[in-house]
Length: 137
Image 1: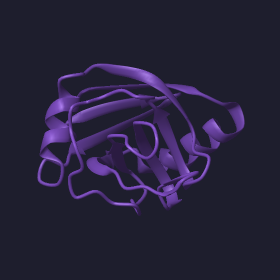
Image 2: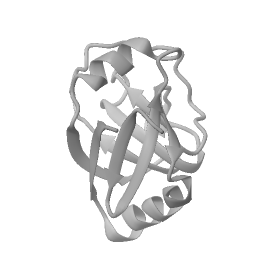
Image 3: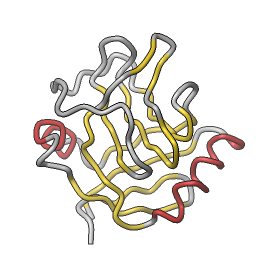
Image 4: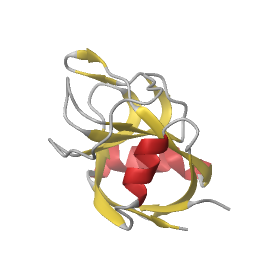
């Protein structure tokens, strides 16, 4: 079982909070649930999708931030060199922007639905933005 249910396009995922790695990010994001946005394909990071959040301030800083998440390791980038965003990797990813490498807080990990990560990525690449909803499982 997971802590968070994620519906993205026609796919559903379960994920667990990474409270040991990003406790402040998890606590702040959990208060937003249910949280709905649009997810699109990345431009520079490889095989991942992202939720662009502009200058949104979640009120957290960097927590054990990483630039090389594995498929299903969801990152929150609190902004700074690039806009605030949620990164949703589905395969090989080097988190970047046009300014260079970025690092984000690993705050969720997919525990169920891994087989749909690549199909979601390909759907956003070829069909465009999809709805995404994060909610309590």
